[in-house]
Length: 114
Ligand code: AMP
Ligand code: ZN
Image: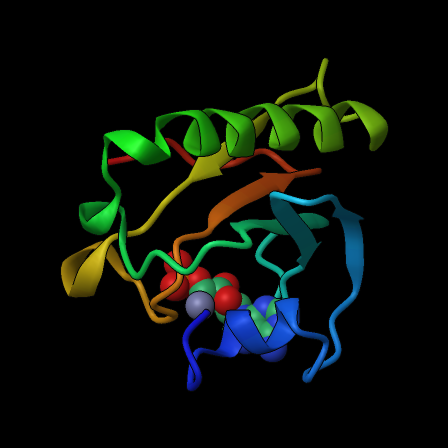
């Protein structure tokens, strides 16, 4: 936990969020500024600032975040139509909250990258 981290505060329930899934390892909640009809953020309970700060110890946790995203996609019936999973890193990657999070975007045709 990091004292002044927004997403740690959401995990501690100090700030409200529209939670769609939680267990002992991860929390998933709707993005406050959705970029698609379904826009969910999947975060680890463990505070990791950026994907650069993840270590081999986090390998399972990062895989678990991906599987959780796929489960949420299935539950929302967007798995067949398709969806996008994104992790932004640092300034040029567009990261604004420094607690690793996986974006799940679905429900519209997403534009090609690049
Ligand atoms: P990133 O730009 O990859 O760091 O993504 C941060 C995301 O967090 C953005 O899409 C924001 O809209 C979202 N966000 C910021 N504050 C909140 C909040 N309080 N609850 C839910 N999502 C948030
Ligand atoms: Zn944090």
